[in-house]
Length: 370
Image (cartoon, rainbow, N blue to C red):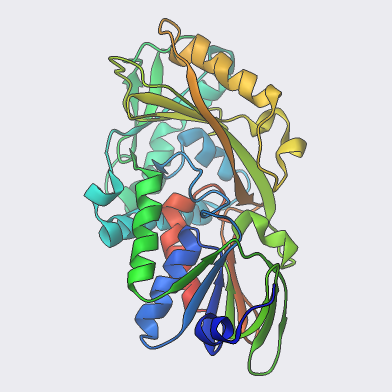
């Protein structure tokens, strides 16, 4: 693309900070930079028409980890590490709510519930037996018992007759959250250019040379917040993980309220606008879902519809309205990567499917790396 003198002069000269990615992390990073540097020229580059990845494509869970997920984490992390992970998620949700406000987020506190397929009875028994131990571990975070047994009040089929509920979990509207963050960034004088993908960069003594699919320019500092897509730019241990989602058309008299997990969080669903949103299933074919390509597969979509038919809405007619996918960044560790890569370049990556909970704080911390 041949840019004019005016275009370079107005948008691409004397850039103090360039942020790659306009998702939760990137926008919060830019907002924190503005707070720290009121007169700086801040640019956000976003390769999609809208924020890509997972920020506008997630399920809107304000969650901290189901009990089976936390017990799984305890097999690969120390108790102190798991406690810190949950503390970071709890703190992150509170900061997000304080930043935007519950009414803007359409935040609702209906609790979170883990269901257990009857074929997973041993998993249910393990979780039930560890209930007191996990509550004790997390008491410093929640100042009380987070998990409790709850009856199957929504009459789901094919599952144990008790849930294990997290009474502090909630839900929010992902679209409203991202729109509010975009508006805050724009009102703070932060420039956002969509449809611009960063291809390569080279850090120099005083600036970073940045090449995109549309133009090349220089920036004093570069901050990378592309999460699951980071592999094309940096050599960090971040694995893309595609998450497929579907949502029903509105269902009359839908009584289900709350966020729900099944099988260590590999399946999850919630109510939204008199609909059921259901996602997950990458555990059916991990290799295929280790991709940055958006799209859906027959294998996963058929399983999601089967769960709707047999478990969630067994006696209720429904129609699917939309299907989509998002791309998360995961790894063998749940702790995000916050790292200065060179003199003028830093990254904030690997949110592990917890972007809603920790994206705000990771973005703020990234802003302080340079």
